[in-house]
Each structure stands twice: as structure tokens, then as C-alpha cells.
Image (cartoon, rainbow, N blue to C red; front, top):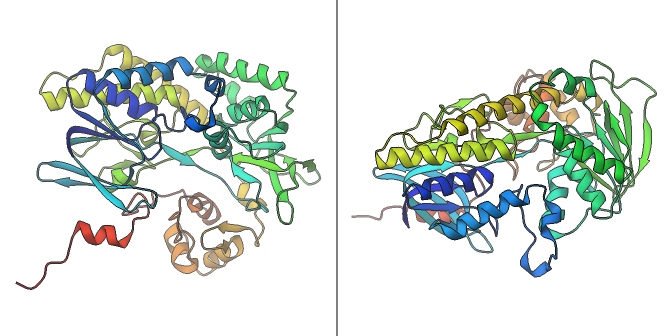
Amino acid sequence: MRTDLAVVGAGPAGLAAALAACARGLRVTLVDAAAQPGGQFYRQPAAGLGAARPEALHHRWRTWKRLRDGLAAHAVHVLTDHHVWSAERTPDGFTVHALLGPEQDQPVEVRARAVLLATGGYEKVLPFPGWTLPGVVTAGGAQAMLKGGLAVPGRRAVVAGTGPLLLPVATGLAAAGVEVAALVESAGPGRLARHGRALAGKLPEGAGYAARLLRHRVPVLTRHTVVRAHGDDRLTGVTVASLDAEGRVPPGTGRHLDCDALAVGHGMLPHTDLAESLGCRLDGLTVAVDPEQRTDVPGVWAAGEATGVGGADLALAEGHIAGCSAAAHLRGTAPGPAPAALKARAKLRRSAAALDSAYAPPAHWPEQITDDTVVCRCEEVTAGAVREALDLGAGDERTVKLLTRAGMGWCQGRMCGTAVAGLAGCPPAPGKRPFARPVPLGVLARQHPQEGPS
């Protein structure tokens, strides 16, 4: 399959980019792993569930309708259920490799003159004793269950961690009939107040969530954290405790909350695997881009959470700018992003930076991890094993990985990398994974078949 522009990821950034580029004359192919476009933010219930009011699960339904109708009106070629595992440069452009089928073993190739990466992000969860119990899910996982499956993780839930995602998760669960025992937020109101000017545009949205929490009588515990999840075969409750000004848990502040579900999250991390495989430069953990959302690799653009976690509005703005820029460069015309879009992006980036600072996880969270707490779930590596590696001289994620196998499992360190770095006292590092997802050896063999004897 050949196209002008391959857009990887059909969330807000990818949708905005595809529509902008298609409207400016490009042949656009939009590739996504989900069954429907929309990404996590605009995730839709499966048609077979017969949702009567799917708009009740979203607070930006009009925007989604505009994007959905735009896809129907434009000639964007949408490939759903296509799991992209690699992208590579070729003499005439780029080849995007994907897997199709129930077993994800049918290879598909999309050849394009240019690539736009809108690969989004994934959740960061910091471990604590009991976090592997059945009934403990990520905050985004609980939201995905509700939006995509019209299901809830339990009857009585605690929503905990830090970050703006906790608000829609708590209000969504409460509206679905779940008794939300508490929203436990480690950040305090003072942090948000210090960034009041940059966050002024977020006040109406925040006030709306606060009103819904009040209407559903959801207790909000700020400057608190979950220190332990309890249960044998599954979750039966959690212990939450207050945090002092330095982010430590003062003795004697714990309290028990009965629950059968815990939705926990500590922010987001960008998906950069495809960008790294193409040789794009990273700025810390994010893909580095110029004002037009171009990476330093000619023919590759990036937008959305991969270039910095900032929410759906920022992703839409960046996607639009990237799509306009890609169309202009491929058609040989003047760059097209409108000044209004550039101004909106700058404002939204300031808000995103303020939120990132205000919702930083507690500084001393590793102190609450007991030695028997599993850190790497795939390889069942405990915090004690990581600490032993540190005693042997390990000082970074890679050395801990070599000594303990932490990060060598199915997720390739996506879940445990931040925790290992925190225990090691070093900043998280990019994963440098050769593939964006697991791929069967048979598929790899067919990509580069061994030449027989001449």
C-alpha cells in the first residue's frame, strides 16, 4: 500500500493531523491498533454493546463529532486493528510495518513519502505493597473499561495517585453507579495555586469536575497517598496516609478504606519507540520537534503526547500544525500552520508545563516500598532485589536490568522503568527498544528472508 503521508495513531493528534493534511491535498493513511479511531480520549463503546448515550462518557463530544464527521467527509484511508511494530527509512520514503489479525501475525506494510507519529503515551504507576492484587487497575485502565466496555472494576472504588486524569476517572465511575470511597491526590492545592496564571483556562473544567464530585459525595483527600493495598486473593481495602511538605508519610497518619477496586495512576509517559527506531532526537523522554512539529529526521513529523504530555487540546493543536506542515512540504508550498494555531499551542504548552509541575509524584515515594514489593511484574523482581543490585554497584536502569532482569519481560520496562529509576536515584531514561511491540519471529524472518546458495 502506498500513500503520501502515513499517520501512526488515531487519537486527537493523529486525527487532527490526518484531516489537516488530507484537506490540503495529500493522500493520507491513518493507522491505529484499536478497532475504531479516537484513541484513549475518544474511546467508543463497541457497537454490539448498544450504548444508548455514549456521549455521557465524554466531556468533549462535539469535538469528537467534528473529527468523526471530518473522517467521513475526507478521503483519509483508515486502517484500524493494525498494530505498528516498526517504521524504517527506505530509498523512496518510509515503510511502516504493522501486524493484523486476531493473533497479530499477519504482516502489513504501508509505504509513504513521509510519516507523522502521533503515538500518544502510556500510564506511569509507582509501585506500593499490594499493587499487584486483582482489583488494582490503572486509572486509564478503569476509564478504558468504562468507555470501551461499559464495565466498571468494582462496586466500591478508590481513585488514587496524582494528575488531572484522576478527576474524569472518579466522576465517570461515580456517574456509572460505583461508590467512590475517596479520590486520593498526592498533590496539595497550594501547588496548583502557584501556577494559577498558567492554569486560568483550566478553571472552568476543574470547577465542573469539582461540582460532580460534590454531587456524588466523593471525599477528596489532597496531600495523601496509598501506602498499601490489602487482600489475599483480591483487593479488600487500602491504607492511605497524609504527606508532609517534603513528600514523606508522617507516622501514625494512616487510615483504612474498604474497597474492592483501586484505580491508580501517577501521570503519563510518551511513546517514543517508533521515533527512536527512525533515529529521531529525543529531548529527555520526549520526541524533539521544531515549531512546525518536524523532527530532526527529514520526512518525519511528530505530535501529541509523544512530544510532551499535555492533554487532548494540545494534541489537537499540535496535530493540526503537523498536518499542515507535512502537506506544505510534500506539495512544495509555503508552510501552512495558521498563527492562531501556533498561539493556541503556545498557551496550551504553558498550561501543560504547569500541570506537570503541580502534579509531580511525592519526592520520597521509594521510601514506602518494602523489600518484598514486586517492582517488575513481568519478571517478578522485587524492590529488595533492586536494592541488592544497587549495593553491588548498579547506579542506573540498565545495570539493574543486567543484574536482576527487571525490564526484560513482555512490557520491556514500560511499567517498571520509572520505579527502577526511582529506587536507583536516577532520572528515567528512554527505553531504546528496537520494536514498538512484540512481533513473531516468523514475521521478522519474512521481512528479510535469508538468501539461498547461488
